[in-house]
Length: 123
Image (tube, rainbow, N blue to C red; front, side, top):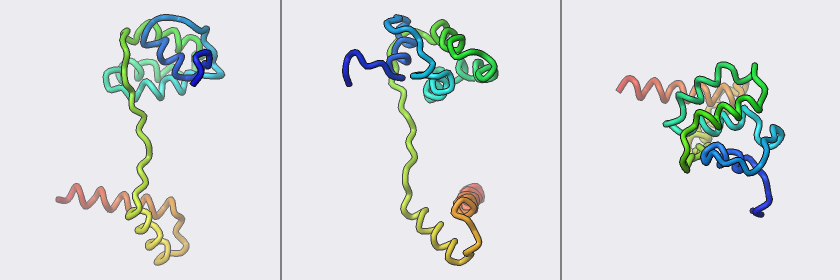
């Protein structure tokens, strides 16, 4: 990544360091994405949730200013949770669709997830 490149992480670092090096640009880091990213930190979830009620009623720069003022200064490592591909789960989906051809893959995934959760709760 180039030093002069401005991206989402530039604005996230500005929020964490309280040092403004680049003026806010909602095209690069809109309020929804900032909120989504900051919500992955368990220490910030309460502060982010307070803003979540007003997120779509306020302009993006106001949300950014709120985060600049309320998020404690300090570097954080915020891990983004990625979807894990479960091959065994996908095999079950295919098998269920073979048995019930009218069932969509979405419905098959929901049914399998429901049955797995039900079995875990019964144990």
